[in-house]
Image (cartoon, rainbow, N blue to C red; front, side, top):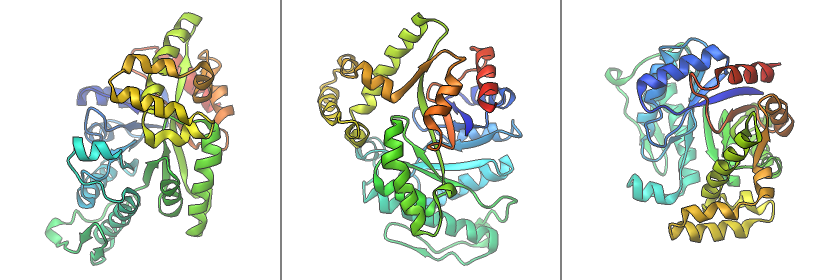
Length: 338
């Protein structure tokens, strides 16, 4: 199991510092997210300021961008990083697509499938000179002249990961993709019973196996050197989980444990803006299912025990920062590698 980190930088200067630090400490990869900043720009500076660290998006939103624009960005990052880039794509939920990005919400699963297929057709055109003739239900790419082709690169097989919760996305990852980003709001049981079997089913359809698909996620880790530190982080994570659990898309994560009604209650509170009250609906029992708690010395073994056979790559949901608990992170990375 690889140990990665999340890159949450407020500027490109900070992104460079985080990437260099992550490589020096020994993390296997750094993932950027699309929340308050563009997910690709931090990786551009990271690609040119590191030499070993894997780099990827976890995730970049698919539908606000065309397959062609995604193809150009991924190709440039793959070339600049020397083959260390992973394109991680996700759909987000209907409300954010329509109301935040002003893009239509159309059959998200089939549309994402088409984006993956279109990307591979575009890259094949650039690398091998194959005529570009991709025509689907949602996208059509049939024009590529030499003036607009970036040409061949040394590492043309850009890995594509997709993210999701529902069975369709899991099967799609198994069938067509190199990896799957499991949502950080998960439990080991949800991964074991709902995610992994669907990935395996999709892989079998394409004549592949579960081992052909890298399963990656970040985990809610409650960690501290004292009970006071653990208790403070526990409440912070409880609030974050209540936010995710209020979204109907993630109800299956609760359903598998018989807590589906909690999602419905939280959804109503979120609609009414009762953000402070929501955390009280997440019980200690639920928190123990969706998080891993322990001292810094205990956490590596606890994570390996929980995710053995379920995840191939793992990151802490709350990322490390240069200059903050440096010794702790170095010890964790070393213990995890051992």
